[in-house]
Image 1: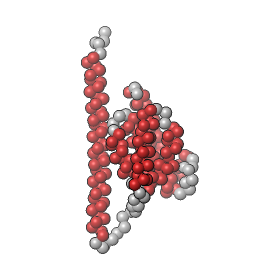
Image 2: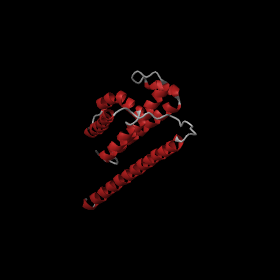
Image 3: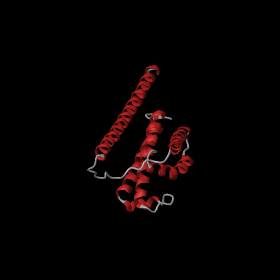
Image 4: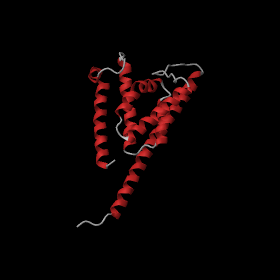
Length: 187
């Protein structure tokens, strides 16, 4: 895909993200997007929109070649461990597959869909409370340790995402420099 076209896609997705953020911040604006499947629960509607932002972010990184297939699989595996990710994909997978127009976009959706199917086959989603439940018993230490583990996984994800971004950027800069060396000098 040409660099100009990629920049255009990124700009369009950034606008899409801004519109969705506005809708999450102001629930009255969610109605402007129309109904999502059978969703009548405002809280689920907001989670669906946020989950869409997550997957769209992955796809944006995929489109500009800073997210590898193995890294996408890791992200999707984590996403589909929870109920929100699974419910989102059940509602979004058909429309997303229908809307994909490029081979690369179809590959992205196929990878995410495959990871969803593997997660479902592995068993039920993990139920995690939305907020921490205070507990003075001996279980509280293990919950804190589990929370630290989740924080570590999140930190690793952020670091991997940043590394993928930097590697992709360096790879593109290297290609550009190579092309400049190969191109004949201008008039």
